[in-house]
Amino acid sequence: MALMERMRGFTKVVLYVLVFAFVGTIIFDWGMNITGLRQNPRVIGSVNGEEVDTAYFNNVLQQEMNRYSQQTGGSVPESQQQYIIDQVWEQIVREILMNQEIQKRNLMPSAREIAFNMRNNPPEFIRSDTSFATNGRFDQAKYDLALQRDNYQANINYWTQVEEYVRYMIPRQKLQDNLMAGIFVTDKDVKQEYLKSNQEATVEYISVPPSKFNDTEIELTDDQISAYYEEHEDSYREQLKRKIEFVIYSNQATKEDSALVEKEVQDLYEQAKSGADFAELAITNSDDNSAEQGGDLGFFKRDAMVKPFADAAFSAKIGEIVGPVRSQFGLHIINVVDKRMVDGVEEVRASHILRKFNASSNTVEAARDSAAFFAAVAQEDGWEKALEEEKVPSQTSTFFTKGSGFIPGLGLERTISKFVFQNQVGTVSDFYETNQGFAVVKIVDEQQPRTKKLEEVKGLIENALKTEKRWDLAKEFAENLKAEIDKGTTFEALASTESVTHEKPEKFNRNAFIANVGKDPVFIGTAFKLAPGTISDPVRGTRAYYIIKSIERSDYDDADFKAKKEAIRQDLLTRKQQQAFNQWYAALKKDAEIVDNRKEFLQY
Image (cartoon, rainbow, N blue to C red; front, side, top):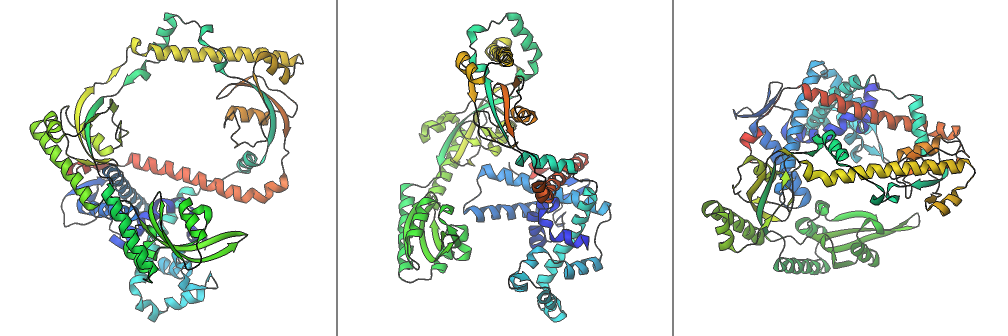
């Protein structure tokens, strides 16, 4: 029974978060064969000797690419393709490792266990299905009726999928139980977490920032600079860097494309006004994700929508169709279905048709063809010849390193970055689709790994030393102020005579962001350690040295703590479980023998 209850609430536990989005696709689209299809002898990799078939990987990858296209309404750009490839690979590796661990621990469910959970512990998507609900609540009697033999056989395909889902989830819940058995939250942990959000303090303080002191008060010697360089020499080492020259053929909508969209939207608006079925128009013409629901957006408040859309929808009458309305997303035609008041706030229910200002297929194809032709000419006749003949402007990046995928001038483009560091200087690429358009690049220069010379970083070292010296001066100055305070001088008097900042921020808790201080753990920690009326010694925070005086600190409210205790405990437990699982999985993956041959089969 305990297992049943935990599975029912699985949406809040660690493993569910990690596997649910992927398992739905595995079960309902591809079946449970993680290592894939055997008709293709090539393997793209393996996990502890268990092979991942290339065709299987490509199948999963294509599904994810299609999913992305459906969600965004466009093709997958090159910059996003590499991310999806990496995510699919990581998900497959994760599934294999999890399955291996389940087998190793002998956690697979029996047929009786599956049947018991099917009847007595239906998955959440079953429990939320209105087909099994009475008065908005799950009705076990209706569910039992659906499971009767005749009804079950009549919907055998559906129930087979549900059974596969249950079969998949039971061992993962068991694995979680095994992993989380020793994880708990103490009463002390709960109380500390409660105090972070619920105990408040009021203080005043004097701040002495290092910026109070200028460079004329600081003298540096060559010996100090040399010693700092030798101590921090590792931080001046640079990786291999490369530089590219590139051209961009824009794939953004032209004026002609935008004019065509405007005409199409006007035609749709006139059809809708003439009585055409609005839902059908939305299904066949809208670029929004709501198209599948006939454009229905449900009820929404004014601030839930961008201003032009909200203004039009809330100004219209019930049954009125308005548009075209221009927003940052494109052009909208809005059908106002209903209005209501909820807690004194007006809500509107509307459907809409969205047409984005996308480039036409002709525009995209022309840009792609131009980029492909430029790449061919540059590879055959040379980069300069291609620039001269095609009369296209080029740009040159600054030097950049591998790893992050960021390229100055292009942004985050992992695929292009891989090309740049896998080929020789002088190589010209094929074309790549980027967020800016279709790009062709030439690797023009490189800088070998090296350690910067002292002369190159002398300015940086001087700045670092001067900064630390200013901190030392701030500390000394703050200590002198504290001595004056101990003699009876007030904060106000010091602020006036010594030109230092004196602040009395609003009451704050331990998680607060304090004006002019920030979320400084040293400042906040000191403030809550002080008894009301006492003054701290100078403490070094993130922005300054502070002398803090406690004015008030709220008392611990035992009744309030008891009321919130269990909710805090559950939140802390979930976070600790998540952290524990992440650490366990990282160790499992680190110890695994993973062979990744993707680069042999994929062009990236």
